Length: 249
Image (tube, rainbow, N blue to C red; front, side):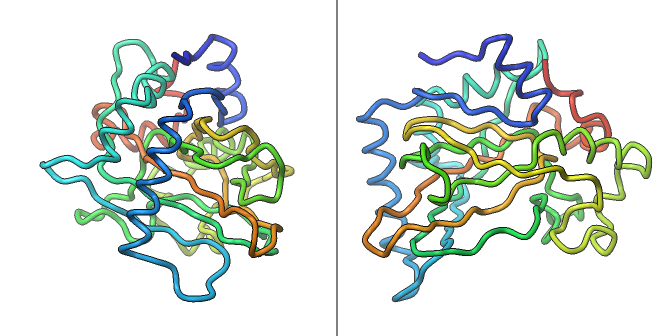
């Protein structure tokens, strides 16, 4: 079973993301892809659609096959290894079935941060601890629907919020477009790795949907995204965004 090494933890802290290869075996990849097909059969893209198509499914008290999948593939255990000692990860509350259907030559003009529009029912911004992306298709080549990320922006965004107060996260007009604050971004990178890998990205990391330059005959990109909260995150979300490494080892 895959594990998070000290070097991997350091990479995550410094860069804001980490790709762990070989988490899923071929049987698990096949199961995940069947689950994606089942979801898209109920909520399909429009005829002739190309580009991103996502479906969000919330987990109820009765559970869900893709929640079982998250646990059984070891993603839960891996995510917990990124956290500081004594802190556990809550079960995810939903899954995003994310696909990119080629051809889609669009290149992202800039990044965004999740969970701000709409907010949670009580008005709290929908912050979380880490994004876990389970890759069901190959990402070894760029421009195949890979996620675009701006390394180290989780630290600069955290500094931005420490200086202005965590509630600056709710002032969308100060972070348009995106939404993402006007901080130094640096150059973006595309997440790369084989099918069966898992991407972990810090909540504050600048990111966006990537282009897919394949033809209509090429395979679509398929990823399952789980938005994960460390135990107690909702109560201390202000601390977690103003000190972006507070929840991590």
